[in-house]
Image (cartoon, rainbow over all chains, first blue to last red; front, side, top):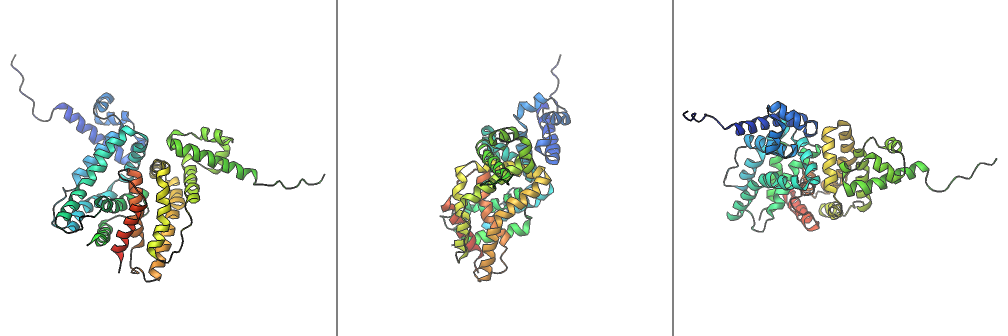
Length: 196
Length: 196
């Protein structure tokens, strides 16, 4: 018998992964991490629970990928705009714009709580979420130092923590709004503060 | 029969409350919010579970009071030092100094997760924790405006979010240290950034 022609489209495992991610996005983002079981996730994705566990060791690891896909799709890749102010705006504004659209604060709070309890998840969280989100800002600050736009001694990590910290603080504690106007004002204060 | 003389010392209910708070401090701070049951708390405090529930509707509400007592005891009351830099340092440095001594990040992450899921606890959390912690900073900024030290149009809430945000960000995400040197540097950047 002749070998069957290779099927078009993505391999089945990739489709299953995508179905799981889609189901997880719908359930986790809408209902929150604690309200959703792996059984419900597998049901909605149309796969077995074993299939989910083949790629993701826990709900929390899956939620991390949901967040990465969700934010990765919405945010345009940060550009080299030629100025630090422009770069930081291009990194932070699209992110801040998307935050109120879904209960991201609840998802991140649940992931943070898990990261503090579970060392294995903590390593995943640091690499896949914390560092990945900081890297564009780190690059922008390194370019600004090279251009002589900011002093070479500037503590880039602290600059990022002032900006990312203000955004996370409002997202997590929920005591005030975060929008483009406010993130622009935050960038202005910090850049004036580190100017030569 | 003559009326018995009034017993010295605190009334029994106050002693029970203190015993519960002490037990909760020991258990919650050492083992984390999710690892501790109300039964264990009541056992360690030597009271019934009903007694705990008489004053605290949940573990989370109790943890909030533990945090308030714990931080309230360590931090000296913020002083009017005559300058905004001095005031902010007197508010933030003792707090930052105490943060690494216990797993406060884990406790706060668990409380944040609960605040996002439970509207009743969220109201308690906002009033008892978020606003209470921000008020000394708000007062310091209001005094600085009155003295003409900073422009009256300064967005005080944003200034606080840059500083508190950076501290919470490192405490919760755990990607970098937070200490007196770093909090001083953060204050310097933000104050330079808002200077007239």
